[in-house]
Amino acid sequence: TKGNSPSAVVVFSVGEAKILHADLTEEKAALGASLKTGDKVSTKQKSKVDIQFADGSAIRISENSVIDFDALSINSHGNSDTRLALVSGKVFAKVNKASKEDQFSVVTPTAIAGVRGTSFIVDRSKSDKAVVKVLDGTVAVAPRVVVLEGLSDEEIAKDEDLKKIQQTVASSEIVLEKNQASVVKADENL
Image (cartoon, rainbow, N blue to C red; front, side, top):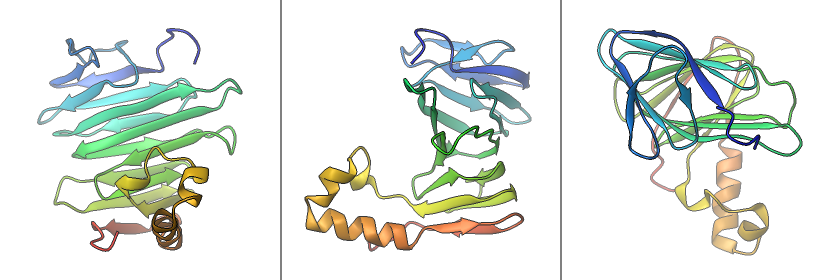
């Protein structure tokens, strides 16, 4: 990571929106406010916030939404890894992936939308299901499996049960093309 430079910054804000920082301090999500890993943004009714990332990607957080900034990092090769958790509500993402190695994903309790294309929406405002809608490019959606998170492929390969789960997930990844929507439910079997 590049020292303390902010990884994301608020470029537009309307209505009542706030940032809860990882250190538990709070501020209005005002123009120019910066976000780092571990921060959370929440919007109230009739509010929305646009946030731009170091790699030029941007998201718009709709009203009544909560988003956790799980990872905002740039590795030594200059590749960005952005991972957002949509706790509730709706987010629109326009992703600028300069290289294949750049990672940008939006996680919900039931799914991970990893971006291969450019713009997509993840919507959790209706129910426990996450609806992913692709506006342009392609997005890969896979059921989210908490036990696999944070494990390397080597660690998973050593454990037969985890390997089976990983294969199931890989086979159930859906790649959505433009103008397709997918509803991802929590999978009981995983």
